[in-house]
Length: 399
Image (cartoon, rainbow, N blue to C red; front, side):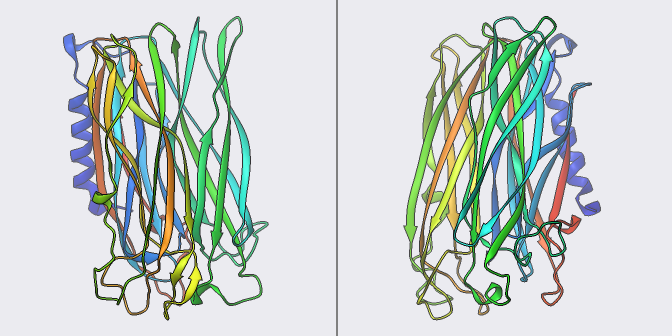
């Protein structure tokens, strides 16, 4: 898989290796890559058969290594998904610990309802006196469980995603004689529905069933070495269905909805800082669409952007400035004759966390991975969403 990407992987690995060279050739104490979200853009709109962007296979034993994954699968229609992963590498010479953890859960139910689960995760660290723990998202993956899956609810077809959230709670930190333990709860919700012709037949079509994998980055250090402050951003808007399939009238664009130059005010005097995503909530509302423009239903997805991009940090004031992308789009002109656009409403809530480091030698560098996934299938016998055809990965290394 992905042999045609080899040149891009070499360039990315080289960039990361070069960025890891430091003063006096002294190896950093610890390294990590922080997930800061993604852009996910189809050429036309679809149900959400699979969507994800995450870091996994993480190894901290010799610097840092991991794989940056992105997933994309539509329903029965072939298409190309362009994506961008937003990341920041962090290397520190202080006793700051990074660990990763993830968990799979199944969210299912009747269409137009929302299923939720509360999970508890726990990690053990070396003993840290006066500890502070920070929990950030390391990304997620979701796919509609295919027919034949154990305990499947419904018919295994994809649905329109109208609700999705991952909300970690504040961590609990406890010390014993020889270790520090960090535990935290996470609330995950998902709602799916589809009233369109491609998913409105059969006795068991009125259900959704998704496997969701949540991934987290846990940071632990003494209070004298790190400081964190969080901020919540909200973006809500509505749009209209297309006047006709070839017109751009009424089309919305992501650049018009970027939240620019937001500020997180930390404490003055910390040498370096980086930004992570703590949690998010997403919701769409019904609008008029369908082939006749008169069907009141949840919208298909053409674009899903959820990302933060730090632009400036002032160590004297402790202020970190960043841009935020919280954007859902239903249709882009020209709309194919076999598809249709719809109106609707969308709302996002995103909690970001700025992490400040008391380490003048620390290296913090943002970068992006840009690539695409081609979902080329036979509509009469589509591939299952959880196959390698829906995945791209890029290896990451920091030494």
